[in-house]
Length: 505
Ligand SMILES: Cc1cc2nc3c(=O)[nH]c(=O)nc-3n(C[C@H](O)[C@H](O)[C@H](O)COP(=O)(O)O)c2cc1C
Image 1 (cartoon, helix red, strand yellow):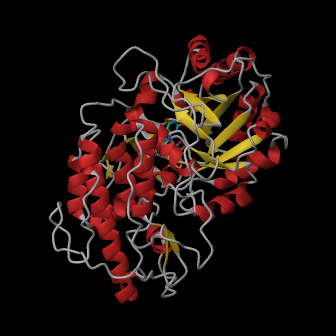
Image 2 (tube, protein in one colour):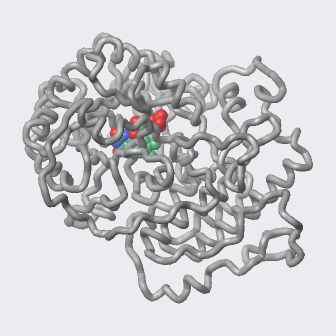
Image 3 (cartoon, helix red, strand yellow):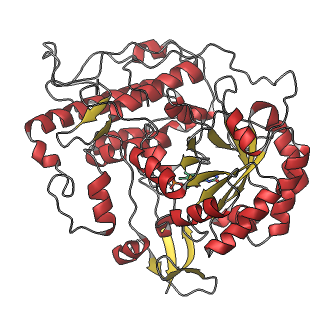
């Protein structure tokens, strides 16, 4: 996320997707990687979370290529092929497919080839739906098919093909697997350092040593993206060092902290968007990121001018005289901002109903971003849960609630900083272990963007989040020494959905 207080101006350009007039020379492997600027930061494919508006957020200032999973249509129901995004700004872009038929894969890849830089094959999806449909990580046993899928595109498609896969049971097997994928013609491999059974509560940790093993045993010109275990910005450099990969891909870490690819500003240059505590730890403020998110919606989805807003609150600001005790959400306290939200301005545009998948994705994205804030401010959680798709005036109102909450949090910190001390960072408590230690190290005050940290599988079993059950369809999970039958984990940000995981002892 950019450090400057005003977001950069949107590049001019048409919204519609336009194809290149002249065919490009097809580059592959490292030559291709160089041609797209040798990126180090890569935004992961995330079905239902990779909408244009979301991946534009980190790339406003940090040029990060991203992977776009495909959907048949915007709402999944119609027949028209649909690709979200804006190829005029959205580059480099890899479009990802799940596939198990080489000819279908090629036909689909041809449709998107004019609008992207590479087509990726998803070999990592571990969900039940992939098992039923025989795709994603469930092709792992069918190397001939994988070879044909990749090789068909390598030979026939005008742009490169890449592959994203999970590690196998051993380093040696994973190396053989990677060699096969590369020999079929994959230009870049993304290696997710988790096995197929590591999903849901059983996600556990990614094993970077597998990725290092591939780096050390594959030809040096092989382009490798490492994936897994990136919780904050510092982890990116740690991962590059540990694995020797060319780039690092982030998924969940980026959902909770869209600024994860950005360097923190130097001490003393925090501005209004970045918050730093007295222990030197900090992060981008949620109100700042929320504003930027809405701004992107205005600019690229609604194609309207971004509303003018007051500067974000800083404790050093002169005290406002015209404050009040009540706002339209009924929760504001003395000192909260009460200026009229841009609701009226929005009303004028009400007749023009815009249908766009980016509007439908807003609620999920914001729950993921605001998770620590909404667990404390349940009124904001409830308002967000009720927000209707496309009701921008309501999202503006939620933004105002968030701004007021952040302001209250920062003021509380100014008065009682010890309330927010981290046991590890501030109190030197190194007796913590497992998830508790990770939380203590990575968590920040609730108004700052931060990663969501799941319990480790063995902790989830103890907590009762995973239950033991006898079943024949068991899969051994060496990470936790339990056998996992099936993990069905809905997006954690949906407060109403139940989590259901069954584990076999
Ligand atoms: C909401 C969500 C949707 C995902 N969808 C896809 C997908 O469509 N294709 C894919 O290859 N991986 C998908 N993944 C997996 C991620 O790309 C990534 O491999 C995984 O989350 C590990 O990275 P992380 O530790 O940075 O989260 C998804 C992950 C999440 C959290």
